[in-house]
Image (cartoon, rainbow, N blue to C red; front, side, top):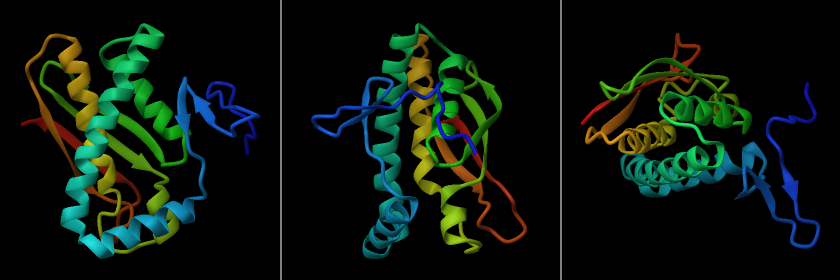
Length: 176
């Protein structure tokens, strides 16, 4: 197991305790803590309501992150999307693999391996990773706008590793 990932610098301010990566403030919490909070909110609000809230918040956050990272690293297009998938994969959510992406068409297919939700919750028979869907559409739409495209997308989870008979999750991005 790798103890330090030099490609993912984490700086901790010794005076404030604030963690930063890629010049953005970060929070570091145990997986069980996050998942327990996630499932408590899901139970209180219902899956449908919570999923919509997470989609919108995730979309906005992914847009912002991709915009800032593109500027910081001087990258654009597919390279921004791949950078985002790489960073998500390095932060414990799971391993995100872009299986297909066509910017002109506004489409992408992302495979999720080693999902933090599946590791924590096990085989629930449900699509547990719905919180990620807005991330993919937000990233794609920021990239499209930066290219001057009017195409806007939506994303949906089509499979989860938490479902019986499935080992990985899949997400599809397509035009609205």
